[in-house]
Length: 223
Length: 407
Image (cartoon, rainbow over all chains, first blue to last red; front, side, top):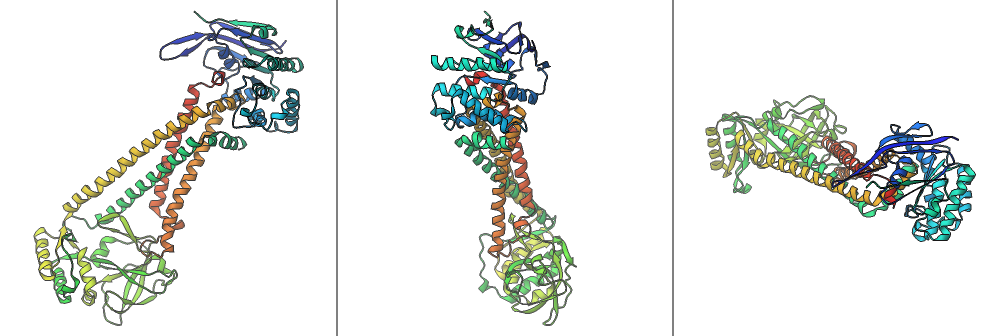
């Protein structure tokens, strides 16, 4: 089993004028390829902060993070941006779409940042197969504001997997969806894991959903 | 390039009000910078020019603002008396321009004749592109040729050594001029009382005035010559006597301003005005910079979600910085082209209107001070651009970009 994430956080601090909040104290996480992990905990425990760190969006913490064998703390920011494009997929709530773009352009957004040769026929084929698998062909030319919550959630999901990432970070992807759409997204997520051995890390408040993962990590708010 | 096009068309320009506001603010800053810098440079040039005349012991004449001239009441013989008195008691610099004539030339311009005596010529120190300087010891009779300098615009039609026949409006007779030299392009003469206003010599003929010439000149030239006459190296007492002689003989009330008077005048009007122009411009530019930063902050707030999503899928801060700089670079370039076009239209308009004393040579007629002012605009744009872009990036990084932004 290949270890792809080796994270050791001593402390992550949020400062404001009035207060200083310390989270993720002495937090350690090791993840192997293909694992499904759920992160649960009360609000303010640091779930989204942890995803920011794992997703290479935040390097402002006291700790060490090795991803795919590369220490990320002092890596070139452009290199990390490239990894966010090619190795990490973010699956977020349905509001995470650019309203001025049609759904098709929203889904293809990662292609803009892919290097030369990454926008060819193969990518178009991937796009077509994902569109069919997720059943969103009918909304491709619509703008997000013209779509339902479930349709937008699927579009966000499609954008998250369009580059065939090795890790999917899902942040409350089903929080505002009805049961039918929630089941659809969860099924798609696990299908990625099964078919491509994609590592799934999901932040959720939904314990039922969390129980369907291989491992559950509880984060607690410091009193 | 594709990414930049995407950002401009799908993100930056989608926020219409902040987008238009920043364009207008840049336009305003460019206009203020250009106008202020050109005014300061042009006034400085005028000041440098008049500094040659404004020496200790020199007095510059000016018609008393409360006095009026009745040309009909002035007799030619009386002006001769005044000039004789001047020649006997003083060295003086004589300069008159604005007499227009029509002679054939390539651009079909009317030609301005400028008359100056040796003292004025020596103080002016023209730079020539061809030929030699003026000589003032020519004999003036009906058959002789008067050596002249001409502007660049006439040099193709009248090369050095050629002659020009014309009826001189100051003499009221036909004369023949021989081209002795050609002035450098865009040689100019500043208005003594509006230092940033200039007449250009590109379509002028400069005629040397000696005593004999003056004796044959008509009333217009003689009286106009007294209006701006500069008396050299004299004393206050002698100037008082001259003032009395001119008033008693011609009925003209002239004021003569010495170096100290002129310096006080420059300090009171020009230096003070320039200070106001400079300080006001700097304050306005600071205000515009603050407004631009504020406008940029509003834009960032509106774009934050879109930028976050782009950062999630592979955008880096360094790429974002490049795009901001490219976007502002293009906005600045468009505004610079607008300022350039307005200036060019203004300068080239002088050619189209055949405005003899204002036509200038250069790309679309733009001259040194225009290019310097455009350079100042570029520098101002770079400073504002760096401040705005770095503030935008600071704001974006301050959030910081995270999944929380999207929730």
